[in-house]
Length: 258
Image 1 (cartoon, one colour):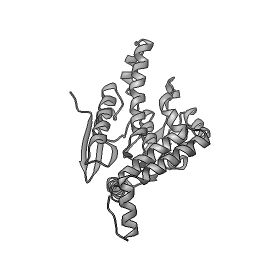
Image 2: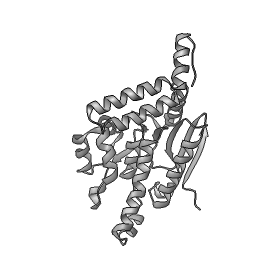
Image 3: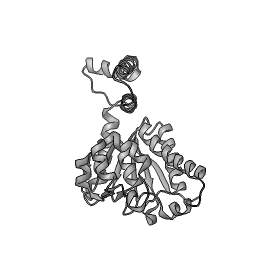
Image 4: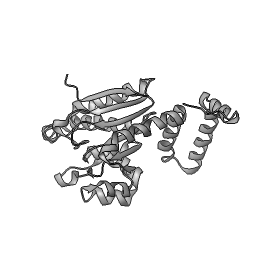
């Protein structure tokens, strides 16, 4: 089997690296399968606390493989639904993972590739990177990634980029709230790794997972249910080992390293 995705851990940072540079890391069925497998590996790896989603080559991810899309046109509705659900599961896994995911964007992130950047918890990009949901320009729709984009940047901004299919630069991506920071290419790898290791040292893994889970869940709840859920989570967290360690260190004026 061709290796389309690499996985390794450096200083508690897991690196999931898209490795299809000749196809601009375009998403095929096999590519999506291997990314999902790498996410599962990272989640079960006790040596991995934070995950960086990276890519080899000039592009971060050019979206769906066009040859693959063309082949899908001869599928039945049921076959296309199964394929769509396969991709849906990838985005859900990233969004719902207990591990923090950081997108390290060294090149263009378009269509589904822009979706990957959107769903990660943090995204850092080089100034030269281009972004966009270009699906409407080829008669397709940005269906699955739209669900997460609306949560991230809101309806008005989402319509602006989804309905036009515009391709835009990293500055606009940052202004829209799609990415967190713009980093020169020469510094991107070092900056991303330093950010990830800082999270590893300074934040409890249990707290990161619980907080990320809560951010995803409370948005779907009515206000009073959201508050009840938050209060219950608060009570559960107080009994957790990490909370007890953290409070003890704080009271004893000791520096804690997670």
